[in-house]
Image (tube, rainbow, N blue to C red):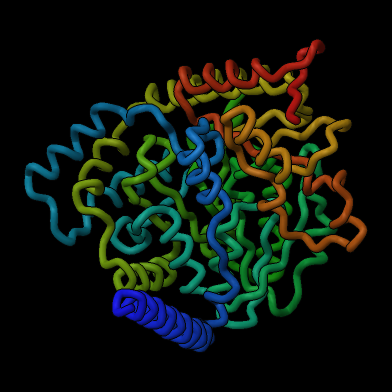
Amino acid sequence: MATLNSVLSTFADSDVESRIRHERRKEERKTEKTMEEKLSGAAKKLTSSPIQELSQLAQRSNAINLAEGFPDFPAPLHIKNAAVSAINSDFNQYRHVQGMCDHLTKMVKDMHGLDIDPLTDIAICCGQTEAFAAAIFATIDPGDEVILFDPSYETYEGCVTMARGVPIHVPLDPPQWTLDPSKLLRSFSERTKAVILNSLNSPHNPTGKVFTKEELEIIAGACCSHNCLAITDEVYEHITYDNLKHISLASFPGMQERTIMTSSLSKSFSVTGWRVGWAIAPAFLASAIRNIHVIVTDSAPAPFQEAALTALRSPPEYFESLRRDYQSKRDFIIKLLAGVGFKIRFIPQGSFFLFAELPDNYPLSDVEFIKKLILEAGVVAVPGQGFFHTNLTSNEVSDVNCYQKRYIRFAFCKSDATLTAVAERLGRLLDAAGHLVLH
């Protein structure tokens, strides 16, 4: 009997403890909800990056990652050796490497014919992302309207939102992603403060478009006539194909004094994790960007700034080889995807992304397709709709054939072995006609 009472007492104690834990958890959730209200309005609007989420899913699923735009092959050996040498030479503390600015001054002069002052017109930052964010925070006040081209990389709208600016999206017309001048001009108002040439992230992410000289002239003319700033992302400046050349918006008449050019080592030298970038602008803008950079991160990684000196001294042959290698990868993935049924109506002119259309008779949306691609083929890419921001009608949103739901972005900045493995995995899922079939 004593044993039975002991057992019953144990169950009773356990039940009481369970209720106590339940009540405690209820109070914790209530407190968490109350604390969540303390988040800023800007933070509440931001969500985790779908590209990073897909990359994490790819890791968990052992899928080949064609989602995120980073190379899976080694960075150039001489640049890595320069970084190792800098670390061993104890360049490991806060540091501004003025030599970087001197080399960038020469590069901008050689590429675009622009004269800049290396002492006043350049801010070295932690990657192009920070340079771009600092440029936004240096120029945009709450309520300022900022024109972006659509589709566009997610970072741009996020930065404008954090600055409490108002993004105004101008859609580029598929499938060639051409700029309609009338759409651009209609987007300006008396509250317009800047045009963000995310698309002048020319070459463009996600489409691979290189803006024509005529399109750039229209944009430059609109900026000048409306007295607006321009902020450009030029990270793919050295990655263009078929003898096309990158032209900076700052090189057009009246634009150097109103343009902030941002770029980095990441794409041209296959070092996306080094986080060394820059903003080039008139002295008053560069100074404001530099002040924000110092408050936020203080300095870019010192040994990698030192290694940047070696990278920026690379001869023309290096960049020619870079373009040849990426053009070969571009041609491989175009042939592969077109061969299994994708519609390739626009050949990338630069960057290392292919924005491919799902076949007309394919019933799934881009998001549904990617989920099946991961599970059945072991390959991950990015659903295109995450790059589109232009408002659609309710009918268009519900229509699976809406063009914003029909594109997939593939990153081809991968080794030949990786791209061959993708071809092998897709090859296992072909029907008798050679087209990809996902169940």
